[in-house]
Image (cartoon, rainbow, N blue to C red; front, side, top):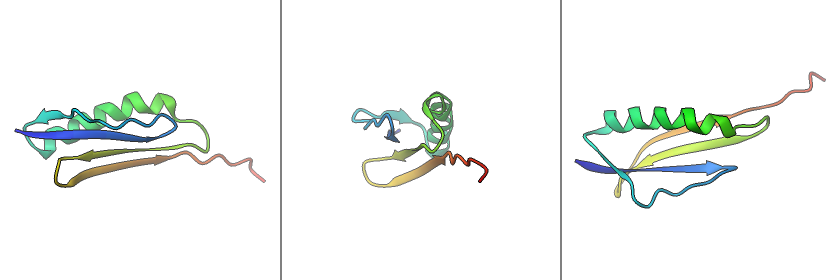
Length: 73
C-alpha cells in the first residue's frame, strides 16, 4: 500500500504530514473527492482553495476551485 498526503491551500491551509495508506491512485481519488465536500463549506465569493494529493515521490492529483463574484457591472 502507498501512503498518500492530502494538502489543502487557501483560507484554511493544512499540510498533511501523516498521510493515509490507500490501495492505489483510484482509492486516493475517492478520498480526495470526499474531502472536497468538507472543504467546500469554507469557500467564499472570490475565494479559492486547492487540494493536492501526493505521495512521497510524486504529485498524484490537484483539485482547484475558484469562486468568482461578479457584481454584474
